[in-house]
Image 1 (cartoon, rainbow, N blue to C red):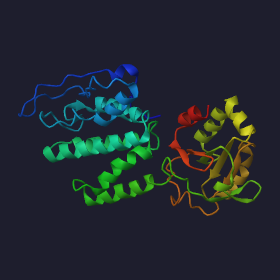
Image 2 (image 1 turned 45 degrees about the horizontal axis):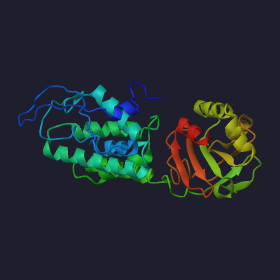
Image 3 (image 1 turned 180 degrees about the vertical axis):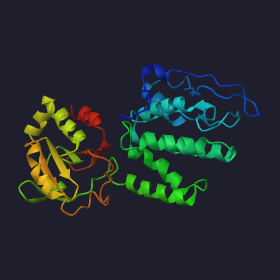
Image 4 (image 1 turned 90 degrees about the vertical axis):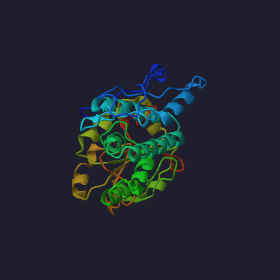
Length: 319
């Protein structure tokens, strides 16, 4: 879980919330602090799904409006206290994971475009750097429960190309964008060779099942052990493994192979367990593994259904 963060998750009631903004003025600032100005969903949009998509793509419109100016410092972003900014980022990131991915990607593109436009109009403000830091923390931190490389990719790609970002930072953002582009949801997962517990060389694509849960982990990882316990607690998942419709492929990605062999008995016997003999996964050549366990859910053709997903998202999909 994310320490020190208060995540607010989307409810039906929140979709109807309409916030009132300040009186418009050209002078600055009109106020030291303010509540986050929620976007107002047009009344003619009545379908819940359409309302969620609209809200996601216009979430930051009123916050980034340049017709009113607000106070900025290390803990206040365009008049909104950082605690409230974190709450809204939690709401925004949760919302985008409840709408179609293509709509979420578009929302992230619009989000960055508005931030950059605001920074160009108000270059002395802190909106762009502070909000970029928050976005990275929520969407890309490997410990974030609402992380999504698929959604972070369009945002960080724009950072990598922005003239408002220092060149050294652009290089770092370009690196992150390249890693986020690996094995995107809806694309074929990268194949690789692994050695199983019997010493046999196998490939990911050689594993045949309606769905494959690919796990990159370590037998000494406490979170990996918790994942095993979580999965074994659901008879529905055990039944899928037993009938062959679900294959669990757990791959050790570190270099101490002797340690892996010593801990071999700790793995469930009905999983396919192995190690990466070429060290291409830990080297970030094929997969962007930033923390373990890292979970990928694949379909029968090895198309990515869930990328670096939390155990909760994986379990919800499998049940």
